[in-house]
Length: 82
Image (cartoon, rainbow, N blue to C red; front, side, top):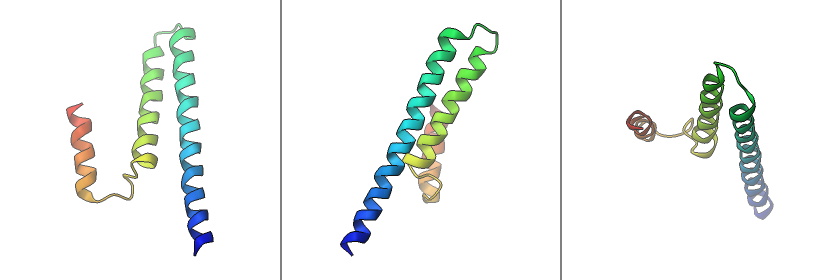
């Protein structure tokens, strides 16, 4: 029982660490795109990177893919009001 809890906690920390590293990588890509891309589509690239970061946070940190319908509705309303 104890080993099972330890592996479950380890998997949770590992998933959080992987998502955090992905978010840092996307943040770095966004920073580089903002300062080094001098093209008319720089804003589109930055908005795409921001949407990817948002999707990672919503699906993997907030676990909206496994959430109740009411929680998903509240998240959608928050996005709409933003």
